[in-house]
Image 1 (tube, rainbow, N blue to C red):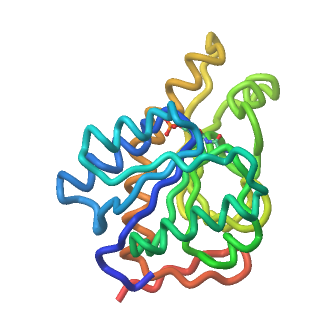
Image 2: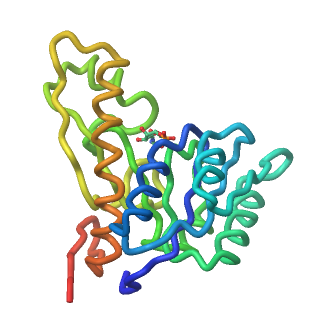
Length: 205
Ligand code: GAR
């Protein structure tokens, strides 16, 4: 991405705490971009309330009665209207259609609460505890057509403690995410990445 001040479009299904930290980074003048619009597929998504708190344009897009492709067309319309350069997923629980992924090819980021390729999919915290790993973490990656799969932008490791349960591990990983996501977005915007297969080559000018 060569655009030095990118327009971000955030899509969420949930709490939206990552959005809060992205918006804080923006307001602190630390992020080379601005959140242009926040969209959610759940009317009660915390992300909508956080967007309101920060006076950012936001909208619930109702998926009822729409196919995945129809729904994604609505999202694309809204994101394009807002002039979005980079789509940022925070806890978005729907699988994006191939058309959506192609439309924003290499311009969609997602955060996952594990060191991919370990523990993709649901409940990465329990997966890590059950496997008995000593380290897990968080991964920011470019979204491709498979779930939790695209090229890796940034990872941050988090230790698993002997007395951890799901909630304590989740809290430690999420604290790491709040730093990792704004940092990864900044790297992605400023780093002018070229994507070769699964690898990201940074070509900072
Ligand atoms: C984050 O922990 C993120 O890693 C996870 O959803 C949470 C969203 O939190 N995403 C996934 O599991 C995607 N596979 P938030 O709504 O508070 O930002």
